[in-house]
Image (tube, rainbow, N blue to C red):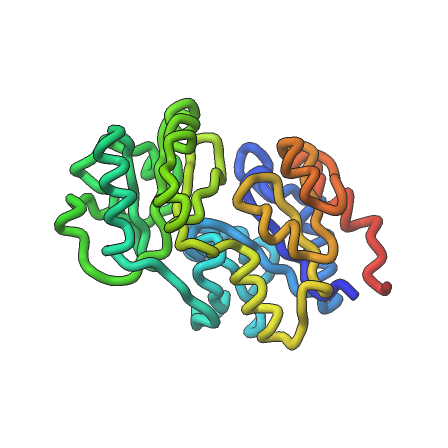
Length: 268
């Protein structure tokens, strides 16, 4: 029986103008009221998506969000951490060297703020995120030692296509590199994915992936789409992403999430 619905945001729950439609809002609120756990799954920190959490009423003490593409599972109210797994600065050296060699930009995120690397090409990330986060520009040599959630390349799509094609075997062995948006390429610790955070949350509730439904549209959603009993891909997703799910629903701009949820039988 499905007890949890986990949703990606950009290209999935959100329209192209970054809004949750009234139809999507209504069905998710109803399911939440009925006892189904509604979990937002994002690459962003929780404060960057707080307006969506409030809009959906996900403010009970047992409501959680998957942030940083699985690296942090956080309680919505109180912000207590349920699960956290990052990457050390020293493990980012290979990635920084790669960006230096190929003249790529890079932003490094801890669990509180963003560190754009000023010794590299300027990035699009700060302008794209537009989330009220702290951005501290710093050379990689001066980046504080410690644990980080991920690193992000944000630039023109063709540049990121080139960056993906040029990844060395050593980098592929060390990082989980995923495209979350046309202008964003993310580097996580090897094995890190949204399904890792969801596994921690399901375990917390005493459930497993047979109790999970997921919605997504992009490469960084593959893990949770494949792990869930019901993996729903948006019609705007690429063919290879659609092939990874169990079902396909409508476009994110036309209430695709609600189209599927309104006809699904949660009693089975």
